[in-house]
Image (cartoon, rainbow, N blue to C red; front, side, top):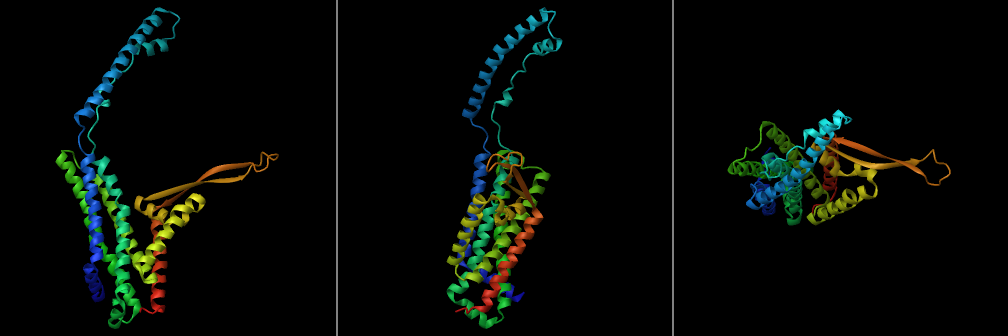
Length: 333
């Protein structure tokens, strides 16, 4: 606990981490500003356009209603007409409603949950960056060597610094989440619109927990990569390569290997489930005289939230073990 408190104090004093915190909070404020813009009631021009559309539809409805009325008279006068057809023609056309054409003010349910869901990636990226910077700065400044003179057991250093990164990002993440949710609720209260019901807020609370877990895992991964590669630039290069080669390119080239991407399991955990599909083709047994004839079917796989979390934990454990092994075997200087 003493080492963890010390690491948390060092975490708080890192200027780069405050910069990342500021950028994350700026993104959260941007979401609130977007909610304010999207929650605005329809303006006079939008209402006028809706009324114009309604009046145009009414004119067409009146002409069509006259034709239907004439048809009703003709069918009624003809004894051979089908009774069902006569009833349908004489029922007339339903009149258009003005409310269907006037724009309405967006509700809390339509705006804030989507904006809050959009914070998942910024939260994870910010936590990852803070985890990397917190450890890599120790190697860049040479303070890691000094620190090992006070704490010579490298395993304890890895544990304390990784735990410090995981715990240190939590207040930042919570501050950003509270900014989006509280700011969004305040926006709709000012607009005079109810800020959701208990069921919606329960769903948002679940999403808050999922986002926190995912971001904390990202911070631990960042610290582990920094222990393994030492330099923030090297970690950035490795992450960019992985993102381009595996997360983006691989599912396009080989869709059946989408399960090899970490993003799939992160999405499954954050959203509760994630699915992907690909075409599976086999030779067509019914067409023997055509070379290369195939029958293709769409295969869909679904990854549950629990499965996604378990895979993320396994990946994180492997990376932490790799960082610990490299840190123990290589010279710090």
